[in-house]
Length: 305
Image (cartoon, rainbow, N blue to C red; front, side, top):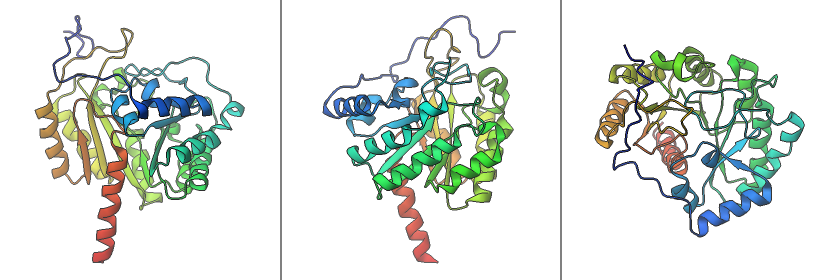
């Protein structure tokens, strides 16, 4: 029997997978700021297909703790190798905050490589970055997309103490595929992290994301949706897995846009407050729009109480 995540021949890309290269004034401005502040973005590191769209809108997802990951997930384009020392990371919060202020962002998204080599998993740099953004751009909301911190509750609590408006942590794939797709991660550990967020900071909006096309079944996906809702995860992103290079897992199936729409309806029916679903959707895709909509809903709910 063939391994479902290792088909023998690469699939041709369907017509709905079309990626534009970054260009235009907005893109040039992002590139200039990156150079000036010596910053990394996950847009580039993870080969995000939405770079052109987001950069033209003047938005980017900042990558902290360097750009080399201590894990080697079999789907991810972020390189491994020796990570930055903690001392080299200490100026990142200031530089990210300066870029956020220069871009006049209303919503900033910050993520990181996974740093299993650090005692706190990098939680201190996350916290310092949130605080630096608050100081440099007081009107800007902050969303963080965090690793699992190897289940370290103190690290999670440290990030929550800085009070981000939104905290994301991606499942990435369904439970049945974890050992093949994310061999250094644990499905239940990620679910538990999201549960702990709501336990410790119920006002923080929680968010997670899944890639499709790795061999998962619809039943697998619905189970993941249910597991996320059981821990009160509120925002879900669903996107197509795109193979970054020949050393990563091949695409098993290209999921058509209408199937993404169907899954979105299923997820909303389970109680998610917001679902972003489509072939090119990624974790921070149109995150500012999500944040504005969720904040407006929260104000309406507060007014009705």
